Figure 1 (tube, rainbow, N blue to C red):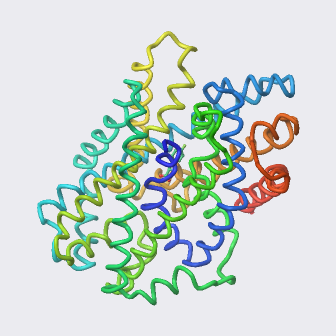
Figure 2 (cartoon, protein in one colour; figure 1 turned 135 degrees about the vertical axis):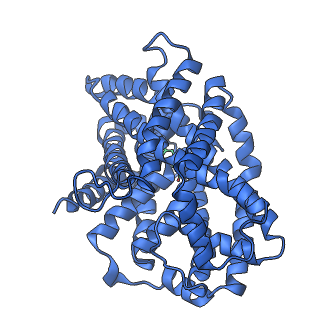
Length: 434
Ligand code: PFF
């Protein structure tokens, strides 16, 4: 449950639709699905398995298993890079989750009802132009993340996932039905699902690969940390299939709800990070009871984000616990505050620093942090974990730890983590430099 909570979050509902929009529609969808199944799923299985074998925090697990199988502790470095990625992701995650918190009162008070696409777009831009308001919501969300981790009450998170997830699915289905009736359903479906192989470029491949890692929470050690808690009787392959299925389903439902509304209202599919906020508020503003409905949606989105952000802060705390003489609670506060401060790079990217392009080009600070984490650090971290599980751990031990029921699926998994995933991911990342 906690692992599903970690994977399903802003990545599936906020990021996936706008990445599809900027990545040219169905081409992105196709590559994303292939990446999730051929690369993401096997690496997720590898991560959970390594976690179960090590039964400690991510870095200790990698150091220990590295020593045991190769005589080298250097594998712990992969865990260290993961911690860096977690801090960077948490920094922007909290800013965006803050938007979702801010939209709860905005909808509840009816302030968004009856607005056209152009008006919700303007409302969103006005909101982004106010750094003070953004700071408040960013701070509130980070607090909500720090408190459970500081108190060590993550079990509450699992309980939240149990009721939040079905409700979120139900609401997304209702939104899809609404979009089907009121929106331009055909245009939305064609955009999402009509295969367009010609539009598959290396840029799309890299973006979809990064999105696969981000949406499944793999490549930085979160799933390694969660694997350590998996009870012996739980099947890792089955658990992983459920996680992947939940992630794909949420993303596809979010896309199917959003694009018909985009096309019916003359909105721009490549609108960028504001897409969900702009399109869904048009729908909530027009439907009966939309104020309540919309507020509930953003509450659920914030909770989905929270079950992910907690899983980002946890490995940061675990990395330092036992190494420095600070309590778990102090580490959670320090980690959260560092990420919060770094979050201002993202927060200002949407207003006073929107024209600041570090390293030239067109990328803002937010774009760089997003690019570095999703498209470089997570994929490369994931490849290292795949190589470790596939080549360094002995076949005998991995057969026992992964627990496939069929030898065929075990062999398939092994080929995927040893060869297919590493070559595919490295090709995608390297292509970006040419
Ligand atoms: N998977 C989360 C989402 O899609 O929103 C984001 C995330 C959480 C990425 C935890 C990485 C991670 F370790």
